[in-house]
Amino acid sequence: MSGENLETKSDLIATLVAIVGPQNLLTGDDLESYEQDWRKRTQGKSLCVVRPGSTEEVARVIRVCAAARVTIVPQGGNTGLVDGSVPDASGTQVVLSLRRMNSLRALDPQNMTITVDAGYVLQLLQEKADEAGFLFPLSLGAEGSCTIGGNLATNAGGTQVVRYGNARELCLGLEVVTAQGEVLDGLSGLRKDNTGYDLRDLFIGSEGTLGVITAATLKLYPKPVAKLTAWAGVNSLEEACQLLSMAHQFMSSSLTGFEVMNKFSLSLVDKHYPHLRVPLWEQVPWCVLIEVSDSESEEHARGLFERLLEKAFEDGLIADAIIAENIKQAQDLWHIRESITLAQVEEGFNVKHDISIPLSLMPDFVREADSAIAAAVDGVRFVNFGHLGDGNLHYNIQAPESMRGKDFVEQYEEQIGRIVYDTVGKYQGSISAEHGIGSLKIEKLTRHKSPVAVSLMHSIKKALDPMNILNPGRVIQVQSFF
Ligand code: FAD
Ligand code: 2HG
Ligand code: ZN
Figure 1 (spheres, rainbow, N blue to C red):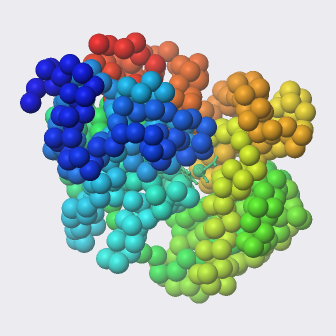
Figure 2: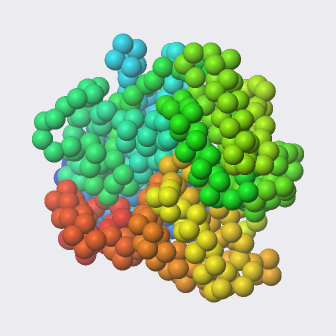
Figure 3: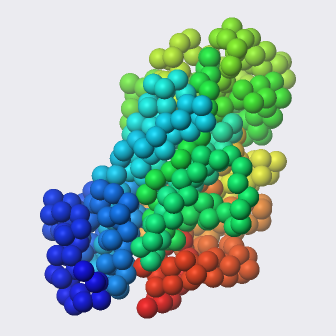
């Protein structure tokens, strides 16, 4: 059936029902989990939610929507933090949920690759890899519900980047449905392939604005023989950075995680989840979480760790430290770190900045941004934590105790954002290290990227999605082309 004949909304819905089946086309008022963002800041309204079950169905849905000039919002687990995966309030957009596409397509132990549909949940993939005797290293707090398609569309980072890189580095091949509804089969398991422009890397990190990812071939790694985790208290961010350099020196490629958390962020975890028993937080302004993965033995890992901590104590870099005695203790420490985002939600609305800064400039950046913000808004509370090993800080600001979170965000988000992003610019950083641009930072992208970069992005969008069908109003602002 040709989309061009579709004249009304009900024609379109009937055609989409014919493609995905009535049970996989959702309309009505009960679609909060698809229409509201994870932080509950934005409530959109869709024309409908379609849940295709195959690549061919995705392609047909896109062709029909394109012909009807109806725009599409691709969605995975809807855990994104920049308002990129929910529809706007117009009631005219189709949410294309990939969650039904959750098959494992192939596992090639010799090639050390796994190929899955885009809707495969990250944690299930980690488990599948583990069962097969491998490691899939991407790891983040939302792993129980985020999907591989979403991870690649946002080029997700997480807690293992210091060793294994972002989602981009873990991906060898992609299957993508284009804005014209054609299928690009790039599901290669090749580690080397220099045949023209790298289309895979163009789609990774494009947040659903250039094509819909329907499957991916991903790298698997050998499982480490032993993993050890330590939690240390440090007296300043400078010392945390010096400890990181020392950890690189002592651990080399065995260093798999290096996270930092300021006192206030841990106080929130302690306040809202006291049963998690946050160690050391009251005694020091910052804590770090260090993880080592060893390919030899637990003794070897412990030896490395003890030498690092001894030297760090000697040099006065750490105030106190504990090494997890077993896997359960290590998991508990990680759980504390992963609970900061949730503790922030419990505390109320807040302003988030997901930034990266060259490590050598990080402490100066924080000092300068902290004092400019504290001068602008009395009583703000700084929730600073993140992936120090990658130079990536979640520089979040909680409302003053005297103010309602919602009022704070409405009144100050813009002003604080300006201070943070101008300071990020001064310190040669990025306004988005891992969460992406979505619609939340779309104006900031134009302000903080070079005009040449913005113009090239504009050309790429126009070339790949000339009708602006895919996730309009996200990443890059373009006039509606149709
Ligand atoms: P969604 O939220 O559904 O979508 C995200 C974007 O990708 C949207 O623009 C959407 O249109 C697009 N998209 C989704 N699927 C597809 C597809 N198949 N094809 C094309 N486009 C698609 N992020 C990090 O990088 N590191 C972290 O450590 C981290 N920790 C988090 C912790 C918590 C508690 C939460 C709530 C979020 C965290 N995130 C983190 C953010 C989020 O989980 C990631 O961005 C994740 O990769 C999004 O996956 P998703 O499947 O939920 O995608
Ligand atoms: C994390 O590292 C996530 O925990 C979420 O990227 C960060 O809540 C945040 O700002
Ligand atoms: Zn993060």
